[in-house]
Length: 317
Ligand code: AKB
Image (cartoon, rainbow, N blue to C red):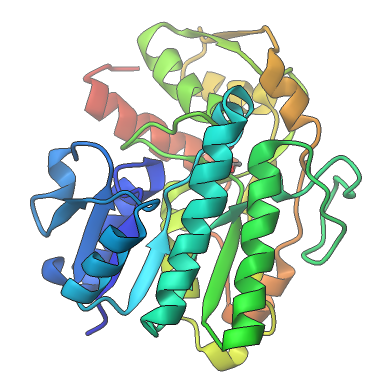
């Protein structure tokens, strides 16, 4: 059985990914790590350790002591926080990912899966149905660090035969842990506000269309890429998507369940970030090379989100 270490385990994706991996690989074989005190969900079925990815000695010791085969490196500063604090984003995303790749190389581990993002694209990228292989000149610090991670990982694959894999996550919608510091976070906040207050003020404009995905699909593509047969992978960094919508589209979908829900718009600096990203992306390369297909669209995601969140918040609609 493979032993997997996940960084940033208490984040939006990590929190749910740990549960899925522990079910498949066994609690003791999935090591959750992060810098904060973990929520109970991360400690009940397996180990959680404090880990600072900028501390190379601590990182190497942990990988050796726990006999790790695969690292999923989720710790990352996202787009909005990255614009507020570019230096922090640089250190965490660039130096952190470099430390991970070096550790995998030196210790000869089986695989490093380091997520990228639609933020790796920029204003000169075609914004509709953006292809997998295309010009990438992002204008945010987060985007710059993600292009770096993709290129460095691919360099390590070519130069050292290291098994690097990456997914360009779109905005991820989920009901368990909240996202933190991203431009697509509105698509989660809107559900909490719709259930609690029947009203939401969007920090993106009404027509800001972005690629998105529901958490079950995000977990599926992450595990599927990790488990994909290496001989089938022609690429190493993959576009991945399930749907594209605007704040107005999702508000209209929510209104089908909560007719009195209202939305207004006060775009802030995150709107400028969104305008540099694709409106929709073409994930046919992931579909061809390792069989990716999403299960949820806007309608099924909205229904499921409202059901799950209303139970969690104890609010009827
Ligand atoms: C963000 O909005 O920064 C992230 C992302 C798309 O990578 N959710």
